[in-house]
Length: 170
Ligand SMILES: [Zn+2]
Image (cartoon, rainbow, N blue to C red):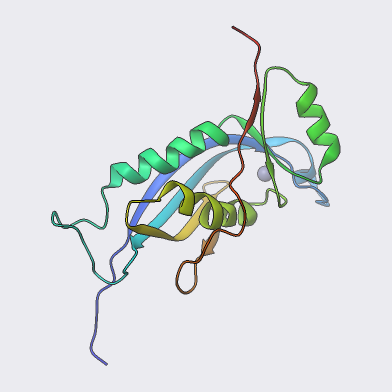
């Protein structure tokens, strides 16, 4: 078989958020936060070594604008909480001002990476001619979870969520 080249881009993005792991047997069940880092890898919809007339898969700045724009609006400085974590959701609802995001899954690094890959990326990358192939979500400098799309991209499994922000300060 002859060799071929596959091109992709990786953009690093960061945000800060709080969470807790519902049902965790140790200290991750306490409310706490992380300086998260996301590495998102994208490739041309057609795959392979497809590039535009300038020679790019896509301009890095567009990945930053779309993906970091979404992260800033919905996850940065928010609590990201599992929809079944009723006591914590009740607590963040009475705290004002407040910003939280209800995730359909427990907010482990694995599930957050998966949500970014399957739900957020297809939404925010629409029209750019690229698909997200892989999302790595770093909780610390030493540990990350990796979600990888296998096969051709399909439709998003669920509608995208939104942060709930309650802030009555002018
Ligand atoms: Zn944590």
